[in-house]
Image (cartoon, rainbow, N blue to C red):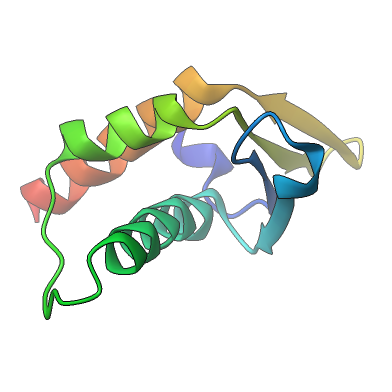
Length: 106
């Protein structure tokens, strides 16, 4: 999966069943998109608890948040045929675990 790290990535999110909550972000890599998911979660914590000076959370909290979203997926660009490959919620969670595992190893 490390081969996907440098691929242009689209993050598609729908926060609730209301279609007006659909949003997308684009990133230069899967790694940046994973960071983007973390930042979105951190922003949601800050909005819910505006008095917090520092945000801390566990990976389990992040996974719970991802699973609470109405829909989330990533599309990674396939450099060989110039198409985007869809990836589901489970794949995103797997990428988060891989990134955290790499971070802990360093």
